[in-house]
Amino acid sequence: MSIGIFDSGVGGLTVFKEISKEFPLADIYYLGDTARVPYGNKSKETIIRYSLECANYLYNLGIEVLIVACNTASSYALEILNANFDIPVIGVIKPGVELAVKSTRNGKIGVIGTQATVKSGSYRTEIEKKGNFIVYQKACPLFVPLVEEGLIDHKITELTVKEYLEDLVNKDIDTLILGCTHYPLLKNVIQKLYPHLNIIDSSKATAIYLKKKVITLGGTGERKIFITDESSSFEKLKNLVVGADIFLEKLELSKICTL
Ligand code: DGL
Image 1 (tube, rainbow, N blue to C red):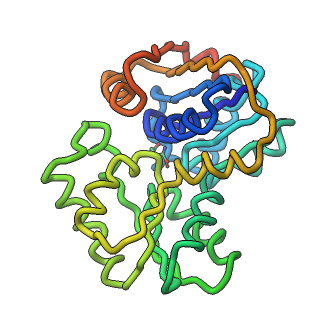
Image 2: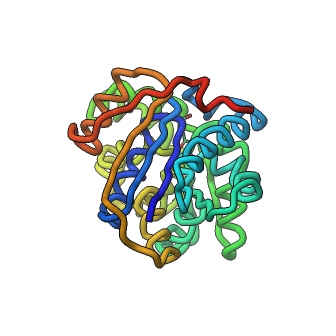
């Protein structure tokens, strides 16, 4: 079996890592669109165009299932990707929501993500389909650069987490969805500050969701990570998240810009 995963950059490696654990024999190809990151502050049209281009590149490698690791792309492009490709396309929103609604005890769920994800209301819509839950959302734009800079366990990060999350926590949420690929890397800081919260990591939820959906197993266990531009922070974070033994392959952006 071969699985394609794309994200706007490095954050989706949290999804790559979890899927690699669940499917050790599958061939897994990851595309991080480092030349055009961030997607989180782009328009809907641009996010859709970039997503179609990333998907197309991976599809041409012969993948059998496509995972949209990027929450922003999952929020805007999932429907159009499903309409354009004849393989299953799975985003990170539904798996995260399924886990969150099972975890909450008081029905109050917080969602954090990029500006575009929050604006799309994608998490709110999915959660409200599941029943009578109260949803509070918050965009946390500074989290992405903090992670990119490797400030994962730093006092600046603690202060920023408090600044963004105090409001949500005061609203008595008991469950918090990390609705952005980068945020699982801040999970420990968030949990340390708010130990009572159930923190939902969409990357883990997506790997478990895929396991339930996919019945074919096997493959040669090949792993490839493609990027559309060189990035030293990508390399550092890649080594931190998935280890140094998987090499990066740089693609010419023109190879994926087909639209
Ligand atoms: N991958 C994006 C997401 O999960 C975060 C980074 C970006 O803005 O592109 O929403």
